[in-house]
Each structure stands twice: as structure tokens, then as C-alpha cells.
Length: 481
Image (tube, rainbow, N blue to C red; front, side, top):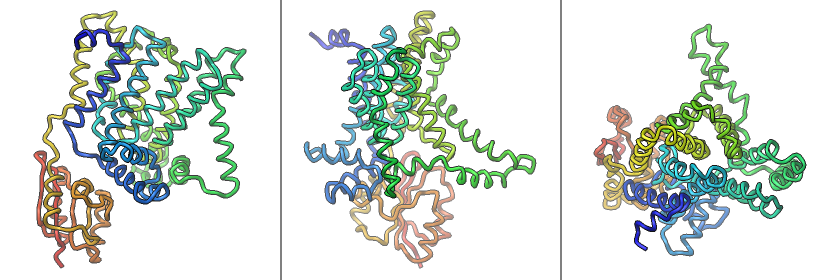
């Protein structure tokens, strides 16, 4: 059997898995520079291998992906960073495949369209070259839903415990995955047969009920909950919200100051739909097509579990954005993942009703799929060049301030050394004035056009400046007293 015949015999599920792996490979080859979160995970994995489990929590407060990377790297002999990318590619491929598998169980006619959508959605596929915890969370989340659909057809305790365990594992990557347990419960409240509802609810909620009881017991004895979980629980903080509203009120005209809380609340929430629509891009069209032909609600009922999960994640994002007033794109990407079956159904119906337009859109989707992972912009060459210069001219020492974590990483330095976020340069200026540093290595994006005046004001002399073709720079400077 030749390759073409094998491709023709591929199912949508098989095609999704293979194509996703290929897209991840293209993304990594096209843009091999590690992201900042990835550096943190690699360093935490090294800490785990050197100093053990408890030490890894001091490096990062939710280190389960780094621990997995470290264990797999130790067992296989593959480098930690490479191991992380392999795991991410497999998790992403698995998540996409399970989306298609869930669709194939309830709407098999749209399986190929969902395959195309889940591999091409911009907001979901723009991060394939980055080393992130999200992929593991997405995989075990979708595995939970796939198992849940199988459990719905044949409910028994073993499968119920298995799917709940899968969601708990998802929370080891992103703790907010625990918020999907209510989605499972509400799904059964509204869809389970009346004569089996309480039995099914008991099955589907046994682990979260036990976990909640254990958490309440721990808190009642005075023990502190894990810092990451307690931090997530504190996002709903009215005192902190009021303080921000009062600050906003000072910037408003007099007549609007009484509305500062309303403006802050609804202004923050508006970020979610704006980000979601932006991430969908042209895939808004097949989603809106479901509304046009009045089939949106029937389509949602084909896989109601994903609709409940979508709503649950919106609530998670709402708590986060009201507290922080920003959302990273990958946080919103879960909404795209969960909406992809609906978008695929919309595309299928578009192709049925308007075949010519449907085929044109499918062709456009293929082009978007490639553009998501194939970078034609100039590479970020400044980090490797700066790292090479450091290795030949400057040994690492604590009197060097390192803002450019990727430069430090490629130089073999500890990337976390003396790191301040770029928006806190005023803290760095005070540290320089107090004589804490002899050298400063800055990561300067092209939009920061006034950097030379800042360097001059802080008595920093440029030793080397390494710039990418896009004019992003790493600047190595010395303090002149």
C-alpha cells in the first residue's frame, strides 16, 4: 500500500493526530527560540533532578509539568527542553484528536470539518512552538470528555472514576481545570434519565466531593492550602476590586466617578468576547452560519457536555480578568478548543448548503493552518549572538543584572538571576543607583524607542548591542560611576 492509498484510508481521528504532529514539527523548526515560560519549566526540571521534589516548588509553585519533563528526560536520555517539546506535541495532537473523536461519536457527518477547524484555528495553533503547560491540561481535559461520552452510553463506577481521575490529572498542569467538575455535574442534571439521575450524579461527583471534604478538613485544622490553589481562590476579592475602582475613578470625569465599579467590571469582562472573536478570525463565519439557519441550539445539544465546559471556563476567565484586567491568548484558547465542534458543524452545513463557498472556505482554512506554524518573519538572532559574546567575554556573577532571560539561558547561565519584569525598570534604576550591579543585560523590544536616554540617565555605557532584523535588541551595558 503506497502513501496516497494510506492517506485515503485515514479516518478523521487518525488524520488529526498525524497532521497535528507534523504542524508542531514545522512550528518548532520555523521558530526554535524557547519562550520565557519554557525556560522556567526547564530550570525547574533541573532543580527537581538535582535537589528533589520539595525544591522544585521553590523554583515554581506548580511544577508538575517540569517534573514530568525531568522524569522522562532521565528515563530516555533526551535533553530536558527537547523532552518538553515532544511531550507538548503529543499532548496537543492528543487533544485535537480527542475533539474530533468526541464529535465523531455524536455528529460523525462533521468529523472531517472539525478536523480541519481544530488544526487551523489561529488562537489554538499559534503556540505550537512554545513550551507550555496548557497542552497537557487540554489533553487530559478532552480525554475526560471523551471518557464521559463513553460513560454516558454505558454508565458504571470504574469509568466514572477514570474520567474524574483524568480531570484531576489535567489540574496538575493547570489547576483551574478543577472548575470543569461543575460542568460535568450540570451536564448530568439536565441530560441524565430521570430514573437514573441521582445515581449518575453520585458517580460523576464522587471524587470532587471527596476532595472538597478533605480540603475543608485541612483548612479547619489550620493547615494552609497550597499557595497556587489559595491564590486562585483569592481572585474573587471585593476589597482588591474596590481599590482598583477607586484608582480608576480618579481618572474619570466627575460625573462618571460613581460608575467606576461598573465600568471596571464590565470593561474587564468585555475582554473575553473580544479576545475570543479575535482568536477565531475568519472561523467566526461558520459559527455565525449556525445562527443564520437557526440551528445553533440543536447543534449545541449534539455535544452538550462541551457547551457546559465552555460556560464553566468563561466563569474561570471572568474571575481572572476582573481581578487582573488582562488575559493571555492561551487562556482564551480553551474556548476555541471547546467551540471547534460547533464551528466544524457550521462549516459542514455551509458546505452542504453552499458547496462552492464551502470549498473556498476549506481552502482558506488550509492556508491558515500552514500560516499558523510557518513563520516567515526574521528570526530572533539577538539572543544567540549575545549569549556567544557573554561566553567569550563575561563570566556569570551576582553583580550582573540579567533582564534577558533567553540570553542567559543560551549562555548557560541561570535565567532567573536578578530578573525584573521589563515594566519595572524603575526598580532597576534604584538598584543601579545603590551600586548593586556592575553590568546590566537588557532585553529591549523595538517599540521601546527611548532606551538610549534611559541608559544615559542611569549612567549605563553600551558594551555591545545585538539586534534582530526586526530591531528587537539585547543590550549589554556597564555602570559608570
